[in-house]
Image (cartoon, rainbow, N blue to C red; front, top):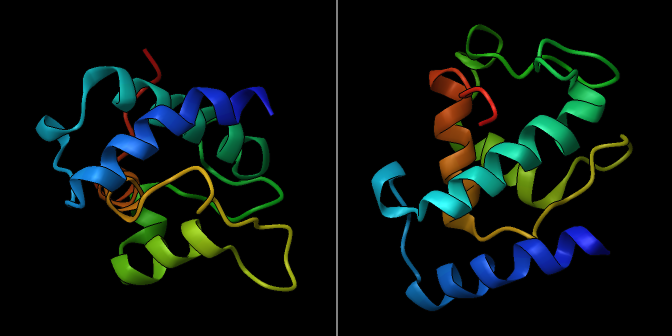
Length: 111
């Protein structure tokens, strides 16, 4: 539950804005939170380096043939019948788009 308290203020702001956020439009603190979320929470199943584990790899080469919209909806709503949860309670669509864009280009190191 601690994680939800950290994420929700940024989610509320992004929902209020109602826009798709480019890297330079997302507050640096929120970018850092989302980077940590991917590295730690997604990394728990997809590997800390995102090269795969229980879940498939999330590196650029593994995602190049996958449609961005499909990746976004997988992040937001999960995958039925698999351990992949939906992150919609914690992320806006714009933030999921931001994560997908970063994954496709090669996810940044946690800072």
